[in-house]
Length: 268
Image (cartoon, rainbow, N blue to C red; front, side, top):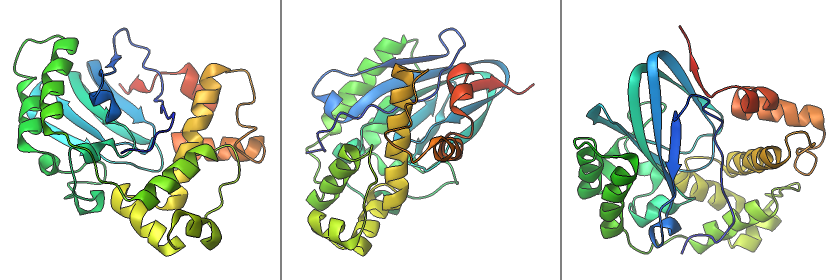
């Protein structure tokens, strides 16, 4: 089973009308998949700033089915250059949710580039269903349904190291305090600090410290979304300067700009 935590990571706002749409799947697929999404890029040269969230995305270009790739967890914002008009369809898995489809540890996935990885690690029938969904004149909802069937047929109960699950739960429950990754704390997970580093690298491609920083950043995003004028950083960071410094490192921009501006922006 996956860690049962109330974790709902956020991306920034896309201000273009219908520029970014999402759809959450129904059970049982919702246990593994956070949501389906579609990014519609207008005519022109654009950049999309993607926020770190510790999750795996599978993405296909709706105008070129061969352009399909995986974005794995990362520790600071990534900017993707896009040429519109274009459209991208994606599957965002929950924390470790991809393991219901892929048993191979993430670190063993073939690397294509700094930002993306080879999708061949996913079952052929899943990749084929995603690509097929681009060939038909489907609505976003119909595309999600088409891909959902294939994902359900390919999914199974994931086998996840219980020690890693303890660490994930601990990171989530202690996100608003100073997370301790000492040998003593790691022993409570049932492993050493070195073994924990090995596990998080295998399954997230991140160090334990990077993973917890992303969890804290996403917690701050959710707090700021709920109360934009409130000092949402106070329960997660030492002081405001620490919060601003860490936020800019993670998001590539300030909190006010992230919530005021579009993460899909024209560069012409």
